[in-house]
Length: 579
Image 1 (tube, rainbow, N blue to C red):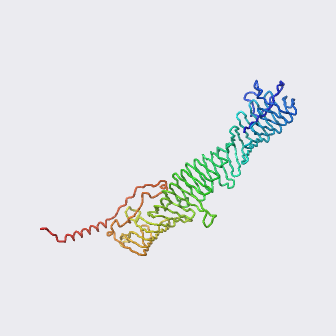
Image 2 (cartoon, one colour):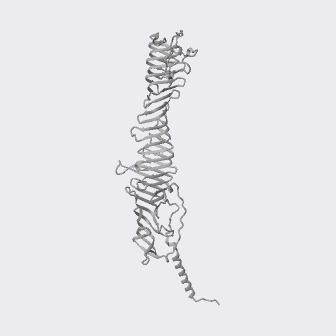
Image 3 (cartoon, rainbow, N blue to C red):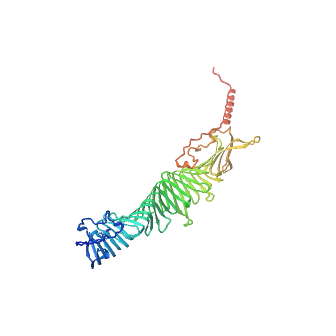
């Protein structure tokens, strides 16, 4: 389509009067030097009169000829019709007045109340209810400027452009005829059946229906205005509803916000990606996820983050931090009430989490945020204070109202270890293990544990010295039971019940050898333990392994005494001498 605002006037070959006055032009049509015609004009460059009911020449138009009634003029294939046309022959200039219509060779049509055209510069102006129609769209405005040499049309008094599907409103626009590109400027609004696009500067190709955004621009879902796209630099494919966002961009969907350095979003499929400084914010869940690359699936209400991702669940008292190689978040309807959605977070491969009163790591972690249930799979470790819990699988239950950890369930090879005294480096640990373990918390600390199935415990036992009033080590109790109930104190683990095939013995420190003070699978881990939230950002904080000091003084003395007694007994035996 070529918008050729060409007013064609047939200039007669007669000699014109010397008293003709120059035309009062629109500033856009002023000659570069003086308002005088070039010394010679090629006849092919002049306009031609095709029809007029009457040709007049009087002082009405300062001595210039004017055509009246069914006027039709031509220039290089374009036809202009009007009620009246004024010919400024010396300047090769035309004014058309009343019901003006310009039919261009490319099929485009312009109608207006009046038009002006300078055949020398090939620039023109149309005014009053201007309408331009072509196979691609219709443009309506009050004043339209065009330049035939550069193949551009322009308006700055506000206009409306329609293309059969979209309606575009703008303060100003430039139409590039060769490329069919429209450059919208100033309060631009593109209104489509499904979406509304608004911004200060938008360039749209009417052939490809691709729009480019320069400045703060928003694409809003008409049915759900909360779902929208914001960018300050990007490209949008109007037909496929695909957005490519490159500066300060955000995708709002399902009450969530995705940001990133470079983003892609398909509004039809609801699929989006983001790279570089990616954040997925979920205000209703008070949780956000960060990483180097992210994907969202609007229709499935799910998202995925990779490249060093981590998630933060913001709680009023104590937030929870997650990290792994991949994090997935999603929502699903409640099985009991489809109107209620439950939120889930899953961390895959080398998963870690941090909370002030509980920290953990496992190959993967699944967290039901709505119900406050966390599942830890494959070599899980969970720490609380100077206590450690491991097993085949760990389930942690949080109180959704108080946000505190209520209890743990350890399934398969359950093993709980607690430092006897966290204030020293003695190699002393209370231990309890079995097939299934339930751990209960009180005031954010492990308070009680119940172990079922092949339950065993190793517990350091103290008693109060009646003379000094201070605790005094009695020994170590070894217990095997079908079920063990254990109570965790500040510096002690008290076995409060031992039932079903119970066998429990207390050995003084002098009588229990060091190898019996720990179970064979004892696995106290200080190298990988997460002690601050930043530790989750790496696979392992790789702390220096803590070296504990074994106190075997009483046992060694007892062994020395035993050896001495054995030596005495050996000395009493008669000696045989060979002869």
